[in-house]
Image 1 (cartoon, helix red, strand yellow):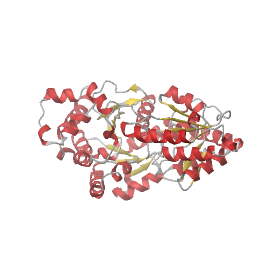
Image 2 (image 1 turned 90 degrees about the horizontal axis):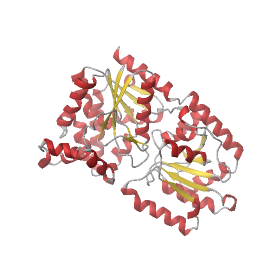
Image 3 (image 1 turned 45 degrees about the vertical axis):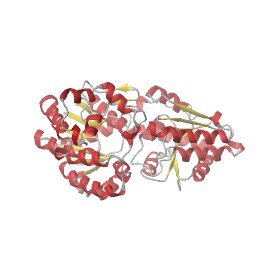
Image 4 (image 1 turned 180 degrees about the vertical axis):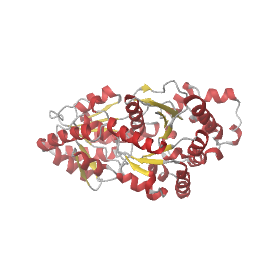
Length: 428
């Protein structure tokens, strides 16, 4: 089977769980003998420090589609468009913080969802022509619902099914200015009629998006995210010293400040004076001021020496990171649709301490590899961390259960096989 996954690139400046999910699915499909291809949008698809593009150009170049929101740039000469879509320009754009903020990009998001009626209709036709005359896929799978604007034209011109994953679209839409949110959800619901199936990454998020987009039951499927157990080396959680890990973009939305404040509270207890805090996952230009503020707090409490940032989050670096970690906590303020970092930690033997929000309880209940707490405050997190770190037997039990669950229930090869079953049903 020939499958094309259409995936937004992000430039590689921070840990992107959605991008890693898409990359893992394509790798699993290839391993199973299918002809799976990743088609990148916006920015180069850089996965943990390595560019992954299979020789395919970047479509919907981030600079060009932004410029075309302005009438003066809608008829740019081809040489200028080509320049704006060159690797140096796109790599520079990837470092700009505004590309990760929904506020201010409402008009562009709407235009993209309008598809052939939007300002990026030329880019859409280029993508469709590439699929039709070059790739000739049996199935097209788009990474998230914010790309639904291309579904109708792809399906109509190629005469093939289109599948759409669902993961954290609400984070983008709900961050928009209040005047745009309701209109955007209505547009997403309308464009959702142009796909043959939706695949949500958790039962929790399936419920969220079915309600918001009025998705019929027969179109909605749930497949948890998976990882390859063989890509991770299991080791017992670190004991001397104990360390709390954080793997994600270091920003306010991902709860980095909640964890910093909880660490400060924990360190006030003499029983935990040797505990360390380790963070990795990168940042954007938006995050520099915020991170500096957290570092200042640690200095004011004389515990800056117990905190360490690992700038490298490649697979090898993450393995070293997890081997020196006792538990992982990424206290995302409003929860997440899934959170791939949880599986990476569990596969490496590191238990989870997560807020009782979003899909976190669902994943922890399914794996037995962690605990939840509420409310999502620094004091509640500090209390739960003290409770867990004070019991090495519980830590070891959760560590073993988490790894076993990865092997038996969250193996990406098994999950990809279930995805292929959905593809085959649509084709037949």
